[in-house]
Structure formats: structure tokens, C-alpha cells
Length: 113
Image (cartoon, rainbow, N blue to C red):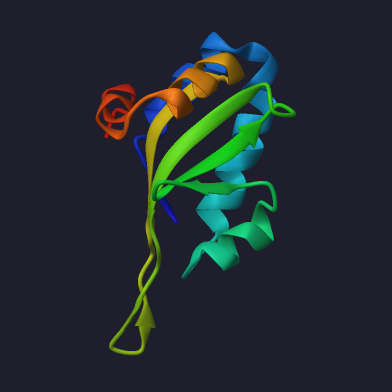
């Protein structure tokens, strides 16, 4: 999978040093994957959730949440495309709770796609 905009994860690693190692491990797994659907993604990350079309990952034992949009790999002319993961937001669990409680319109403002 190709990660769009990885700079947000690099910034999150600098801002939240205690989560940097886990963010780095997440990046390694995602870059080596070619998920075709959510079930394949869950094979790599069993605690990932689908929330209103976004995929939410638990980082640092549920202390942080990473919200992404995934465009899964597709088979085109007998070839499997790369697929893309778009980084929407990296937030603390408390922020995530507020994000979940917000309306869909307000949620969109939290994401940086």
C-alpha cells in the first residue's frame, strides 16, 4: 500500500515520542501490504475498525487513534494495483471520543484529507 501523506505520521512520531515505535511498525506493515478489502486488512490489524467508511487503528494500546481512508488494491488487466492509505488524523483517545460524538459534517473538519 502507498501511504499518503506519511509526513503526518512522522509529525505524530515527533509529537508523541512514546508512540513513535508503534507508528513505525504500523508503517512497515502497511507498506508491505496489498489489501483488497477490509477483511484482509483485519488479518494484519485485528483491532482495526470501520467507522463510517474510515478505518480506525488503535495505536499504543488504545491511547491513540489513527484514522485513515483506504483505497484497496484492485485487479486490473490481471495485475494487482498498489492501493492507497490516506492519513486523516492521529489523535489521543479523548479526542477520538469527541470525534465519534460529533456529526458527520463536523467529523470531516477533523480530518486532513
